[in-house]
Length: 226
Ligand SMILES: Cc1cc2nc3c(=O)[nH]c(=O)nc-3n(C[C@H](O)[C@H](O)[C@H](O)COP(=O)(O)OP(=O)(O)OC[C@H]3O[C@@H](n4cnc5c(N)ncnc54)[C@H](O)[C@@H]3O)c2cc1C
Image (cartoon, rainbow, N blue to C red; front, side, top):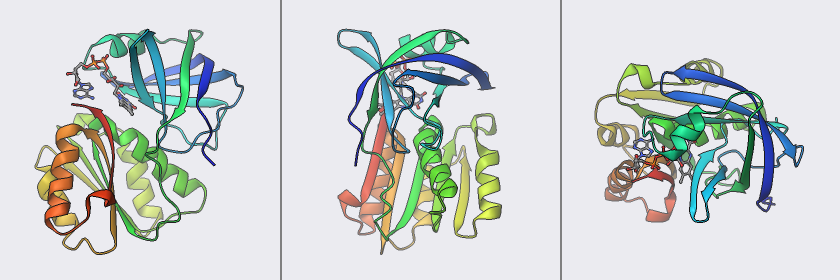
């Protein structure tokens, strides 16, 4: 059963820079003291009556009292400025959990996961959650970044690939993501895709898969921007 979203309060417990422009923040929940959510869901941070920024929860439901967010602050808009200002002790209010970009465990199809840069956040949460709860299954992950310096969480996926025989990890650095999607899905029979990132990546992935015969609804997506 999905948890209804509610207004929440938390306090920053720690921050880390994964790269100069990709930052993580751990938020210790205050009200409620633990946030029930599904891996892949996000929170909404208010900046004014009609202005919000969304952040996917990077951590997994197994740790509901401290949630982690992970942000690309290169866009340098108000969300990025806010994220850069997070430091231990800073209070945060948000609404959550939100969203339906979650892994469907009842779906027997082969998942193809496609992430563009920081779009990796909800997909990594789903993969870690599956791993932690013993629900591992054959999954292919295509993870596109502009250059190797943006390949955050690579260690997690390399480690998962060593431990989970069915997990295929394909980092795609700088080259065409659409070609990588085409190569990873020579057949779309029994396939379901989960795609997160900018609109152009979602559209390009959908086009490649639909041209091979996949129906539109079998491409689940989370649009971060664009
Ligand atoms: C459901 C959902 C979940 C999200 N989860 C995350 C998350 O976990 N981590 C995260 O960093 N962001 C996430 N985002 C995006 C986030 O909400 C902000 O848009 C982002 O942090 C930029 O905010 P900003 O105010 O700095 O810039 P904005 O004013 O929002 O954007 C400035 C410009 O940069 C573009 N842009 C925004 N983000 C990117 C990007 N990553 N790469 C290239 N161009 C971009 C915008 O289209 C716009 O043209 C999510 C968005 C949605 C809708």
